Image (cartoon, rainbow, N blue to C red; front, side):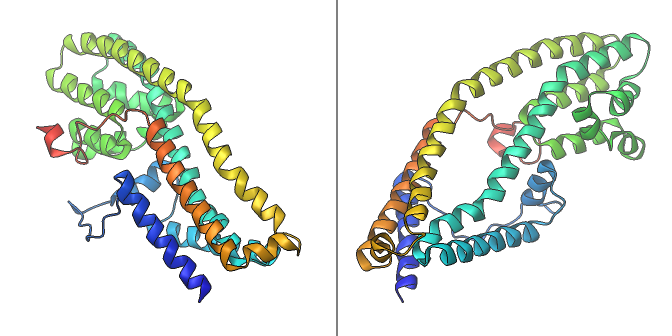
Length: 296
């Protein structure tokens, strides 16, 4: 009963923190705006995970359950094991979110070199479709992976439709702009293609430089914030490993209150720090997942 009460208080604290910070969970049923690949499946594909969303979340829950059982056996206090178990459950999501961001950033960083290759190919007399096919075969590795399906799609659907498919698979604002300009260049054709691509190289290089400076400025703050949140719980686990007054206290009623209040404060602090350290995320203007107001 005490564990159920603790879980109930934890759920209440979660909703309270959500309403206080303006991130209240939505309980209505989410409907897919269009048939095809779901947003979660697209997210996993971008992260390089060959799993379905159901398999991914099942694995996360299993990891949380194993961590809960392990810490409970180690400390003898189920309540102390609750927060480490939750942290272990969300760890795969955080890891693959970082991996997804790294993969997309690698694609962003290689666009200037890839565009220079396109300019050189077009200057040698190739069409834009031929230059893109060559880039998919011999370009930088991140672009080769991003454009791996382009040669086949261009033969089946045409160049414009193939670029649209690549754009939706990347779902990245920087890549959106590059691919939209490539679509425009393909439709215009002629000598203007080279001029458009040269201007695109300059603008893309400037955008990437600004993004790199913003990330570098906020990296130290993010590392310090996460270390401050993790250390108290590691100390708590170390204190309750052996039988004694600490284990007895955190197994009693006042100990339950201390752990719940500490967990709620840590959650609130993490949300607050994440909100303060969150950079300005560029919204997609092009693409099916872009808001309708942005498209308009």
